[in-house]
Amino acid sequence: MAGPLEQFEIKPIIAIEIGALDLSFTNSAAFMVAAVGGSALFLGLCMSGRALVPTRWQSLAEMIYEVVANMIRDNVGSEGRAYFPFIFTLFVFVLFSNLIGMVPGSFTTTSHLIVTFALAAAIFVGVTLIGIFRHGLKFLSLFFPHGAPWWTAFILVPVELVSYLSRPVSLSVRLFANMTVGHVLLKVIAGFIALLGIFGALPFLFLIPLTALEIGIAVLQAYIFTILSCVYLHDALHLH
Amino acid sequence: MPQFDPQYFASQIFWLAVSFAILYWLMARFVLPRIAEVLEERSERIADDLEKAETLKTEAEAVIEAYEAALAKARGEASGLLAKAAQEIAEVSAQRQAEFAAALAKKTQAAEDRIATAKQEATAQVRDIAVDAARAITDRLVGAAPDEAAAAAEVDTALKGTG
Image 1 (spheres, helix red, strand yellow):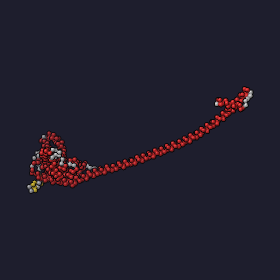
Image 2 (cartoon, chains in turn green, blue):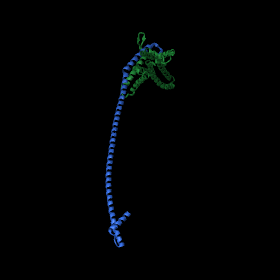
Image 3 (cartoon, each protein chain N blue to C red):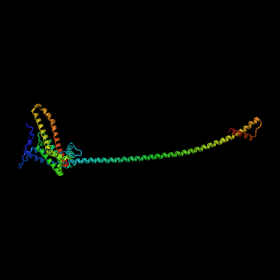
Image 4 (cartoon, rainbow over the protein chains, first blue to last red):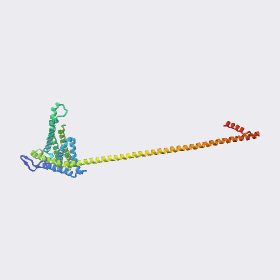
């Protein structure tokens, strides 16, 4: 029987090597493409009616739109509208990657630290550049709380700097860890079903609510990932 | 864990970038404008309907106002007519009453005059009868009637005394 970590293994489908770089099209890449195609197809089909009074499916697509729009309005402000397509894409990409990963036998792209870290690092670098372009040297005031006595800078600046630099790490590890642990847990408990024979009904019954919980976590983590990106964007735009 | 095997790191980052870019393009180019269009159309439609309702409400209010104004005017006119009619009636009745009172007074006067005349006549007749009676009685008692003038004088004196 497959071990609980086998589901995370990456297998090349089409080997591509450019110079020394191995850019093979793997199962991970295939599921990224599936998330892209799936989400685009889903939203496109949901909105195909363009009805004034929406159908259930259209309401769903509109709801995702409204959720992201509200997230930006509440956390970034009116200036965040320019970043709406990016934030929306981010939310949809992470959401569909997480949810497609819940399909038995599939691959969860967001359970790989390198993927979540690449996303988080890109957001971190982008947000930092936005802050620097907008505020110039004043951007550095982000590392010193407004109104604190000047001599506290010796303590506060390093603390704030470390906390700022750890943002991409915490952002990526949170998503990666949640996805990995959830899938390992499901796999381990599913393994007991076969091992216990007739008593396998017990872990099976436990597996049902656990799967529902994992689907909830998949949605929640996509939401958290996106909302934290919004908060970071807000800091870069408004400096506290 | 397979997650920490760096063999496919470059591949994952590359395909992540490619797929994310494609999704961004699809969303920004097709999906988001379509949703935004539908939502905007709906909110416009709602705002339009609300506006229409507001206009209709204002119109209804204007109609009610006009109706009430007309009602108040009619009521005013009616009360004016009523007051005028009442005044006319009062005038006519006062006039008639005055006419009647005048006629009554005239009749009363005539009657009083008639009564006075009758009384005078009666008094004169009573005197004549008294004179005649006095003469007749005296004649029976004494056997000689006093002459008429003396008897009249006595009767006049007696009438004045009782008078």
